[in-house]
Length: 137
Image (cartoon, one colour):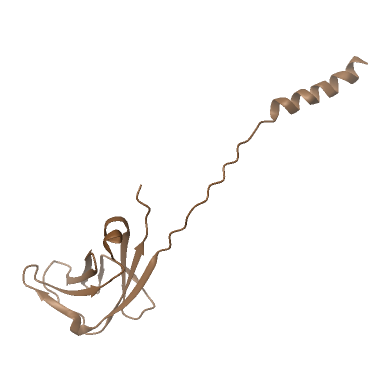
């Protein structure tokens, strides 16, 4: 008889021993959308900078406002056919492309790999600017 009572007691003990309370915390995340803007930089958009000895193209990007300039990530990609995109800075066909930005403007710059002056492209260069929103902590 004792063995018949022992089994239910053992099972009950296991239930209490191996069960635990779990706390489920549900948080609501606010999704901040990124912005992607595309531009065509035509051959006549390039200007020469005597100080840096490079050609640059100034691209007005109104989406780079003060907030984006201070808090967001700005990524830039270029393409010559709008099919294959390359992240810059990068070296493409012996040309080094870099970019800088400020509120309202993005500057695309080109030079030779060794840092010497490179003539600007004779065809349009397509530019994709991605503003990655961030929540400053």
